[in-house]
Length: 161
Ligand code: 4NP
View 1: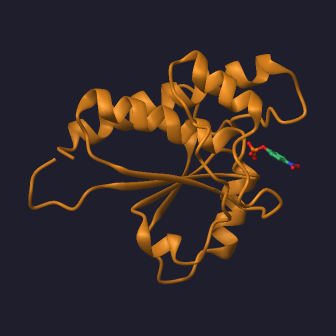
View 2: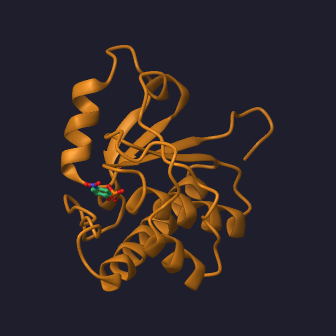
């Protein structure tokens, strides 16, 4: 990043903000730090059921297996001003993306995209919701969000961000 450019900003959005988007947030924070990139990173949910709660314990365990403590993250619901605050809002699945398109203010600056569209060969695919399954679903979520984090960071490095 150069001094005259603002820090890029990315918001990850899933349904509850307790399983997938906190892992996406953690994976990108980790990868960006390794690459020496300063990015404003946050996550939110389209739903409000878990607002104020910490991540699902299975997400915490999965992040911890990779040496990352996400226990202090707190769920929040996506808000209209997020579309002005963030450069990019990245949805974890297609339903989240269509919900975001529906609620986006017409003058919002954020570019909306699907997370796996950033991974060559996985375009158009959802990061499956692991909430109702076992721990293997969270391992798969981690694999997908960390792959996407690598590609996002590489793209930003190529773009000189
Ligand atoms: P997330 O998973 O969208 O990845 O955070 C879910 C968490 C909670 C619920 C659904 C999905 N729920 O129905 O409460």
